[in-house]
Image (tube, rainbow, N blue to C red; front, side, top):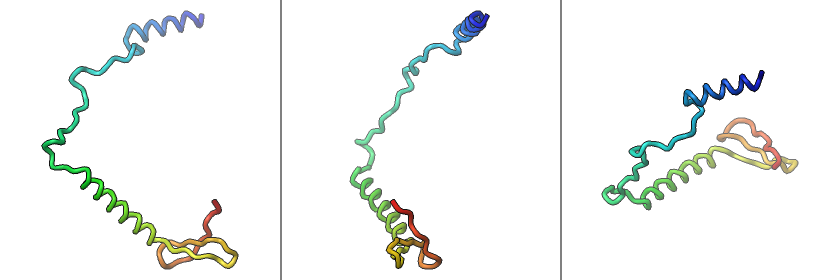
Length: 91
C-alpha cells in the first residue's frame, strides 16, 4: 500500500516538474565584470582608505577600554574612564 502511495506521489511530482532536474541559467544572465580601464579607480587608493578606516576603528576601540591588574594578579577591565572594573575571564 505504501509503495503505491509513494509511486503516485513521485509520478505527480515529476509530472508537474516540481522535482525535476536543475537547469542552467539563461544565456543572457551572466555576471558582467566592470570595465576598469575607463574608471578612475585605483586599488592602492582603495587599500589606503581601508587601512585608515581600520586603524581609526581599532584606535577608538583600544582607547575605549581601561585595564589594570588586581592585587591577586588578575586582569580587570572597564569601559571608558569611569565605572567599576570587572574581572576578565581566563583564556
